[in-house]
Length: 83
Image 1 (tube, one colour):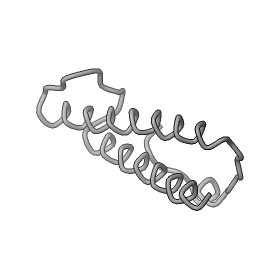
Image 2 (cartoon, rainbow, N blue to C red; image 1 turned 60 degrees about the horizontal axis):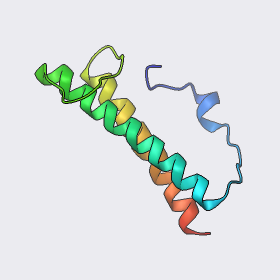
Image 3 (spheres, rainbow, N blue to C red; image 1 turned 135 degrees about the vertical axis):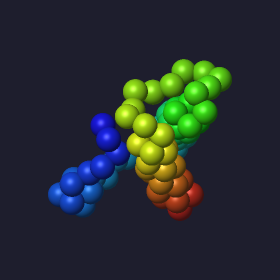
Image 4 (tube, rainbow, N blue to C red; image 1 turned 180 degrees about the vertical axis):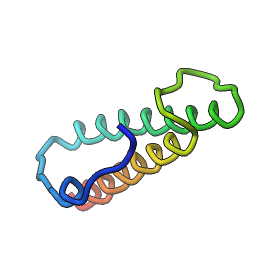
């Protein structure tokens, strides 16, 4: 996964109904993944990381993936706050 989507994939929307506690579990998992991508970017930039890194080409790809995860987290957060 390189953090890019084609226009067809990015416009396809789905509605998912879950208990609020389940949404918080999803946010927690996505947050962990976003932080891992940030750590991976740090590793590619400095050669050091305090933890596991993910398989990406370079720091740019890792940063792009982290940004994408944070955006998804933000979108979920906005929607569950309205509940």
